[in-house]
Length: 408
Image (cartoon, rainbow, N blue to C red; front, side):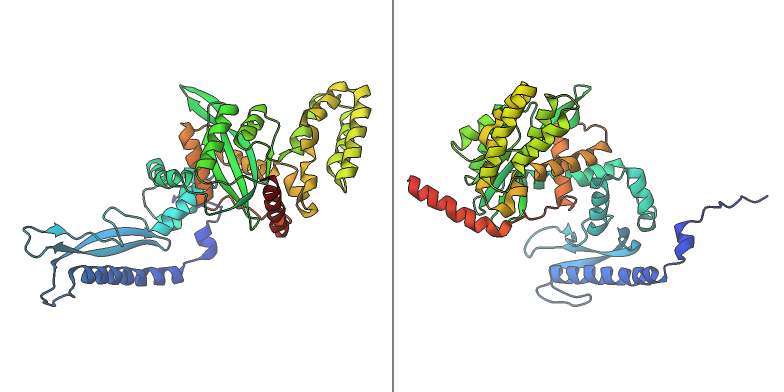
């Protein structure tokens, strides 16, 4: 008996033969070979069979190569040549800049591989998804690893890039904890993240630094790096309740406006009240942070403290710990209040980090963590919207400049 056919239909059976791609692939070979020939002609300053005084090399046949492209594999005959310098002894082999010697995949295919990898797709699924394009191309862990490592020098340049030519109005600071294998054990390593808001309202990641612990000197190192790279004093810094971060910010920019994240503070309040009390705590707290004006918010703040001093004193003390820094956002245009009262922009970033890293369980090194996060940026996996009410940023900058003039 013959082999039984699977009852599950395959995608090639669903869509049928791809005559268009096959036709393009046949033409693609001729096009690539013509481009390589033109490149060689320009290098040796002579076309095939043409003898000129400026000629700087001789052709030496061709060699076969399989190039995997976004249209599938293409069998090529790559031209060869020997290059010579006038008056010099010996010759060297011509190397194409368009198709480097060891390149077996088109750049667009490598971009696709990395994009899938950074999206959280594992290697087996990548191989399955790209089977029509790869068609036998070796794509193992070492291939993906080499592609990821090519990002490293770009990461180092990104970390050291100048910030002097761009003005940033707001700064969000927070940390995300990633699982990293250190000395045979999986440990949580904080990656300190700085996200700035430009004059045009666009959010931009400014720094991602792994540290063994989240503490004042760790944050001070990150902030000092921003300053060295030309980061200007922001109009507002939005942070959570971490004491070390708060101290580092105050040391770097004494007297800078601080907004404590209202979401983090609500989580703190929940820790100090009974489960049955929390719905009322939440309602009273929202009266503070969702008020129509600062005056209304201050009245709600005082009412909250009076109410909960009697019912749950630790809840009242926790609110007072943040003080007026919970209400700083009210001093800015009301259109921006929603975007300035929490660290949500960077929190959503951290959630994306965790979603991606979750597929790997743990990372082999803290540098690998940052490289992976940078890959999410480079591959377009992380996109940011402009801050709500960004049209009012010019108004904020004007007001801050006037304050500086008066102070001087």
